[in-house]
Image (cartoon, rainbow, N blue to C red; front, side, top):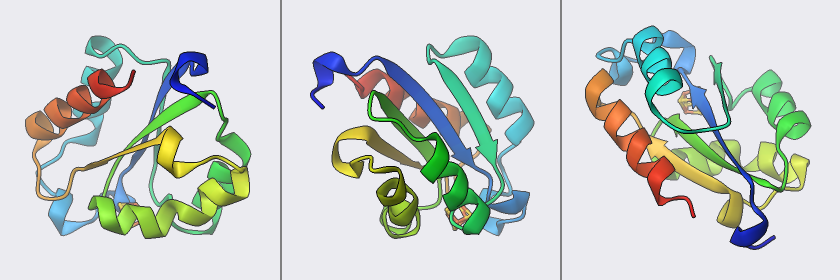
Length: 123
Ligand code: SF4
């Protein structure tokens, strides 16, 4: 599907069980509320572990071709491997419909700014 027919921007935030040492400086509650109030997007979902079975089940059931998914989570290369099965099961192309954001070793402010930038970069 080309960019002209993409209609929605969604944020799927993976919180790594709220326990990853690399995300200790992120207040996920504050981050989610700031995103909700300040950044234009269609909807947002927080999940504790998108790369495990029920996360993949959710991706397989949820992902759609007319949406671009911004995924704040671990490092981009790691996400690419860990989220691949969920995208595949949904039949949605990661190359065209996926925009990863690494929030590893970020704080709430820098994570917010990187998510903002990713949303702005979606055509
Ligand atoms: S996708 Fe990345 S951030 Fe999410 S639970 Fe797995 S390792 Fe952690």
